[in-house]
Structure formats: structure tokens, C-alpha cells
Length: 230
Image (tube, rainbow, N blue to C red; front, side):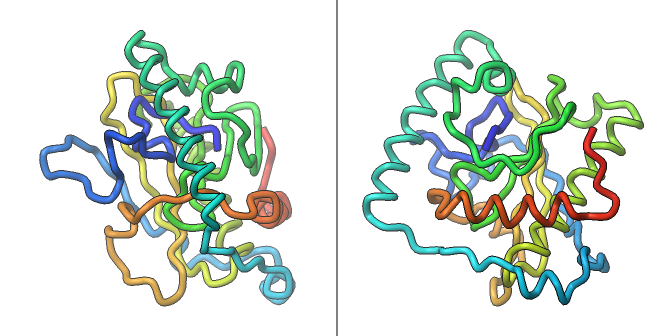
């Protein structure tokens, strides 16, 4: 996932000094959470989607966990070095792809990039990155705001349409870093999962079967009737 934030916790992975399981009360965050899919019908036709839905794998092997741990440590070190220089690592990532490594890309459009989180809390955890460097959405004009949240809505619809058991999609944006870069996290909530903000701090893990997962989401995203690639 190409992810943007001054804080790697927000960016789709937790470096070793963050942990990711619990946010302390003293940590300054601005969080917006909405259940973006209430009363939204899934498109394309639900009967077609039901036949094509992908059931994500949830258990990682020991080798997968070891490779993921090594990768996230390396990413954390690169991000920390850029932060010390006052450099936005998301802008660097968008420029040359040298920060986060290979990503599972749902869509790469003129103004947004949509990727699977590299350290997801649940399968399908997705990041929508606004390519222009702004701190948060208060810096967007009306047209850009509408564009970003239309993309988020469509991506959430794609997650629900593509992933078996995904009943809702939480939308989260955190803007607490000195070199923050606007992005929105979309976190599916699966059937049988307790409702509540705890879903936003579930333990992270590696992307499993990323090629199949991203292909399923991309297919539904591209098939949405109101999807317009910028």
C-alpha cells in the first residue's frame, strides 16, 4: 500500500516503537470515523457479486510473519530517517517508490492512489492517498473534497462487494504528525466482529494472498457504474 502520514502508525504499519495495539490517552489524535456503507446498495448486481466474492485468508504462516516483521522494521527505519530530515515520506514514496516497497494497488489515478495497507488490521484494510501534499482535508477546496470522499465511498463499496463477510467499512483519518500527508484508511468489519472503535486498534499483520485480494477489490471498483478515473 502506498501510504501517507508523518506517523507510520497511521500509514498502514506500526514501527517497533509504536506497537499499534493500544493508543494511549495522552496521544494527540484527530480521528474521523464513519460507517460509510450504511444504506448503500452494493453494485454491480448483488447476485453477480455473491458468486464472485473472495474469502480472505486470515492465518499467516511462520515464514510470512518473519518476512513481514523484517520488512516493517526496514520501512520504519527509512521513515524515521526521512522524518528526522523533515521530508514527507509519502511524497517520496509517490515520487520514486523507494520507501514502502512493492504495493498491492487497487487504482493509481491522477489525484489519488488506492492501495492495500501493508500492515493491515484486517484483510482488505485499504489506504486512499491524496497525492497532492496537504496536511488534512481542511486544506482541500470543495471540488477536491468531493472527489476524495467519492473515491473513498466507491472503494468502500468495492470492499463490501468483493470480500465475503465484509458487512461495514470504517473510515478513519488521523492527522497528528509534523509532516502529515492526507490519506484515509478504510477498515472492513466482518460478520461476527464486535462493533466499536476497538476495530481501529486491532493487531496488525501481513497482507495474505495480496494478488488475489487486490484483484478482487479492483474488479469491483472498476465495475462501479459511477466510477470515473481521473
